[in-house]
Length: 481
Image (cartoon, rainbow, N blue to C red; front, side, top):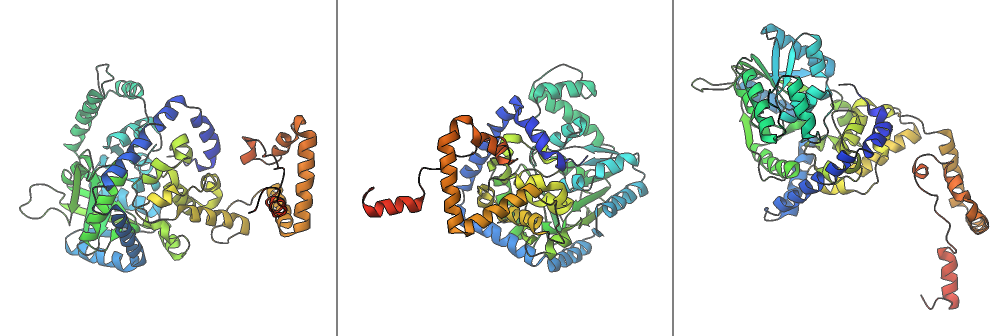
């Protein structure tokens, strides 16, 4: 997948004029958000349930090194083989080596964001190994060569007619139909045949339990369960922050994850695996490899200001309430992660210089922070990233702001610090507004400031300041304060 985070503005302008996408985004995210509120009410105390989830994630990150060590010990004791990869390149090499050693020419994949992050599909294709996405949304997105539109529904925005044309063109079905049930059935038959012949299956991991060495996956289609039970070899790929202390903690996080993802009390399938197939068991892999991919998480963890990013459980709730995402959708974010979760994670994985438009595309409304089961303060992180641009942070250096902007804010800072200068500027601005407002000089002035005022009029200056009104009130003109 080509990384297009630097094209955020251009793609966003295109998508905001996409009538179909706008209609879709105006309907589905609010419905999912509403369903989440409804199912959260099934908790005896929803606020306390959310606080507990945040506390678990906070503890998990605080104890991360110890929990990972415990998880490795328990998983190994259960028969799994735990491998570590420091970056995306090393992770790809490990996966390719395991697949080649087993003589597989294709692999089936369950829905996994980390495999998109490390560019695994492209690496497999270059090695002449066919990756087959088995999640229906990921399968459609793969065929269309598009990034995920939404973390929960990667192709949820694609019109049914486009899916029909795709399936007919690729030979996935023969009869012309736009019936969603029939389209789903055609994909099911096509993918079911792949499961019968697989040697290696790939999945992600929703949670890893330190006390038992268990890996957990939640889903609604059953394809992940097929990927974990049909092949001889199963490779599960995760990032370090997926670990939680106990099975009890994991069960509570799952309850929040499902409610936040799709508005369900629980997903259709919850699969817990502790090691490979045991003697006497009828299904499951004969060998289980768990690859833990760092890919920059150690640096994120080392910085106290960015460490809380690792609390994210990939539920996607923040996308459904974000006023930016719900207007432009997932494509402008240009990579695997979109919405507020992508805006806090992508800059740390790709660099602030490649993602500046992402973390500056925020209204600071705070709905992502309020809804987050992990307790992440997204707006504070966005402000931190922006400050790194301005202050020239050595480790998180982004693009320097335009010289005109720096000069403008320097003058602004000088004015607001000097009472006489500020009042003089206000009087001058008020005079110019009254004398030349008909000439549109405020609109022309706004053009000097690209960004916010490029699409909006420069605000007019009020007839009087608060201090002036206060003085008048003291004199009795507006009554007593």
